[in-house]
Length: 397
Ligand code: CTP
Image: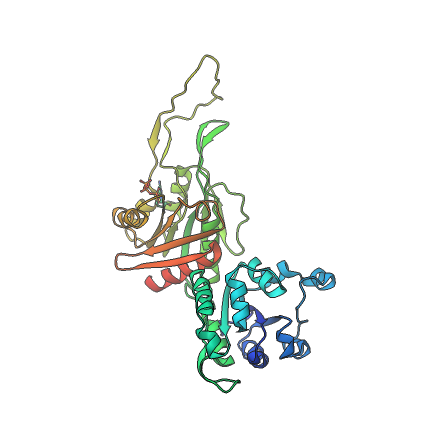
């Protein structure tokens, strides 16, 4: 079965002579099972009629950010949510510049800003425009943000020049796009994932916890299920809904999470520890609410919690074990130390000193470490990072 079966591709068509190839591209994507919807820029309409692309895609073509009727039917946010992947083909020098600078001045750029999925661009332009430093700088910015670049190819151009800048052929693009959906990477595997914070009770009404939102672990659960695995998500308290097709087990304290992880060890092929587990817990939990009367200070004796991931990594037989390292400094150094000390197969390291990424934010930047390798993943939202992490696990496993 094709990787594109039932996948939703939003095809962005920007202005350029290569827009005529978008008709064939729709066909090639559909042949592979994809559902394609089209967003065109006004400039694209000078090269290709929306009616043609509407007839081929079987859906109305979207082109206006400010059309209340179109927005009411499927607005820019719904379009962005609908897509499993946005592919801009052809991507003109102009749309590349707009994307690089985060513009939201037309429907296509706005949908790209609002997206939660991967974005790929297939540049197409005259070779002098391609080599222009401004274009190259913009492309470097996009690459840094994890936006995929497909092509361009070299060859004869519409203007008569020969060189780089031809849009890749539709069949090549369709096949490259299908690699984004390498489903079945973990088919038949059972994956246990810990996520979220733990709560360590002090008395019946108080606890010690941390700021983990659980977003990364939940995104991993979703990406793992999408890769064909059976997923058990052992979660501390979070505000997140259980992802579709995932078995969620709700826990509170580190001891609960430890017990549940051990219970699910038999049959577990891959264990991913993304939870922010409290290292210590109060030595005793007061049976009654602690009163402040007569006290100016308060001392809580703390005892060490079991290290869940280390216990799993030292079991026999042991699954493939992935740990996380959230650090504020010397990130790679401490992450490597964790890899060895905890006997892990892989560590996903992230820098939590930057509040725009990591803990409790929607985006993060991570580095995947194994004993032999180090792979840097540029900034992306947690779901995109989760997909990349799952691909890396599937490769190593
Ligand atoms: N972890 C765990 N059980 C614990 C503590 C941590 O399973 N009791 C796991 C986390 O889920 C994560 C990894 O261990 O995958 C790293 O956690 P961290 O607390 O950062 O590591 P520590 O070894 O406790 O190092 P530090 O000195 O930085 O606290």
